[in-house]
Length: 628
Image 1: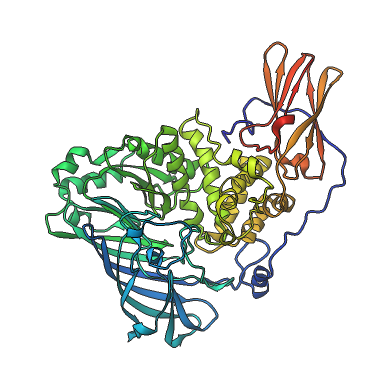
Image 2: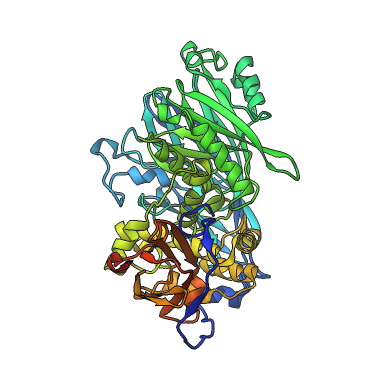
């Protein structure tokens, strides 16, 4: 796993003797009644697979957008084909108006500057199946809009929806979208979209307040984005008309990058200053197509440079993915980002999660946030090379979770951020073997079992601050890491692939994950899921004793906390040599409270130290034993 203290190559295969305890039966995980109902309805099954009656709705979007960078006005028309695949007749549609986060009076998790408070999205026309809707009867509450249907939409029927709208993009208070600097903008959540209607909650009516993230249905996107001359547009999906919007030289460089392993400078600093990149029309319309994705975002700049490379991500089909870095040339920390992005996509495809990167390109854009979108990343400039590596691989790893997997981030942040965090830990050390990324581990050790700490499975909508951070990032990542260590890389990959195969392109709930992993591993892991994801408590191991036994030593490690964590010992001998000993979480599966590790050999032991990078300990003072 390339992680210190867990799978170091020098680990000793030494005997481990847990204290005697009755092996408990694997528990049944507690399932809330509303989620149990999905089993009764047959939409989900307890083996981790979608049920025989599983369904999900979908929507295809045709976006025609005009964006004026000078006024920041976004204006356009959205034509939607909405597929009601549910068994229910729908009397209403709920829409998400995410730009209304900046609307006067909207509830927000954090403050914005007074000058960024806006009138929000202006709906200028809305029709359903050709019938105009009375705009005075729209029920808009910040980021939610309820529309009563003129006629009910029957089960397994479709509706044609058309919306004409406009709003002003925020200049500052950049929350995942907005102006980056004069001449550069990142636009996300920029169009009215139909909310998710699912088998768990019906309509997703949870408002967006800027903290919890998103939950969207899958669909096909066709986008025509019109911007002034000299602005280049990058977006979710494939550019369909490169020869119309780029001059010949740059269109050829783009084609070259899509076929070559080498880094191609599609736009360098001199090119950006020369302004001969785009077609000479007063305005150009950039056309993109994206299939089966849950969202669409785009960025535009008239002065950014563009580096690009590509690689084979699927050796069976020879399919390639293009990786871009698009940035202000003043930001030197971005100069290696194209390589960091390429190595991330390569590691994801061949090492972890060892699944061919699912999209045709990934563009890292120099923005003001640290946020992911299908095929796009909005990353702020950072101070160090290590920060650039960890930020790049974390955000790109989100391609799998939540986008490919369709996760409800609004409710279950741990189901996507936890994976991006373990992905960051693993891949950062692949990019730079000297880099040890311990993001979030120490904060968890310090805050575990305090009032700010809650079980991981607590809904993200019920958390803020420290609790939200711990339960979204380090705690689930450690849980995934310990299961990987327990199962070994091959079996863990099989279990994870079972989950991915079951639920990619769908909407998994937490128990779909737990049950898929159990099925894929061929092993009931509920004892660990229960302890780590559902129960309270804190991680705390201590050295109870070190005793000389014949030709070796017995080290007794006590679990003083209730969270099962690996046992990592560093043995320092009197002659200055060291040995590392590792035991995975299986030593606690039986319910043991102590484990005895026998260290053979006749050399005198000077020191025994307990712990490692990825093993948090809330009370570390008893982690060192000094020999006499």
